[in-house]
Image (tube, rainbow, N blue to C red; front, side):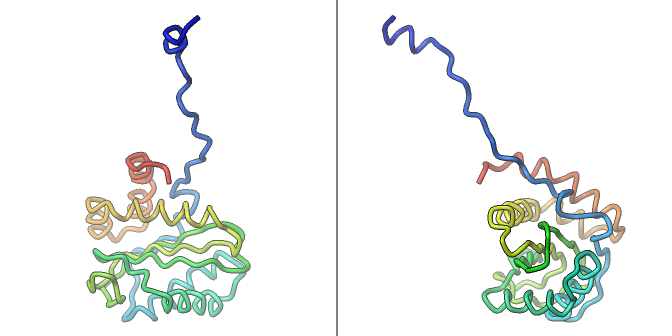
Length: 179
């Protein structure tokens, strides 16, 4: 049996052992804010901390302080009206998300200097490591979809927002290569 025969043997395709994360693992329907009234970046983070405190045992002030500290490192305003604040926080047991559509766009020190009207906040355990990065990559890919963002901006119904975010996730993640 020479090389010719060996080359005819079918080799198994590379098996992916990576488990794909989905938006519904991070975001619950009651963690969607349909029309957040806020006047500034600081106020938006404060309001999001208040929402997050309903889901975890960490005090609102502690969440807010960590969010502010993260923003001092560099803006989480990624451009095109989108911000993705993300922090690791003691007392959080799993990666979770809060999504808010703002009533009016606000200045957020975004990389493109455009005001923000869509915020997808991620909270992760202090030791989350790869899960935190997977969630951040998932949300980044999802929010890069201009058509999805237009639909999110076009509704103020919380159930519709949740449906758009969770139904868009498989297509958004399938279209991009594994990290």
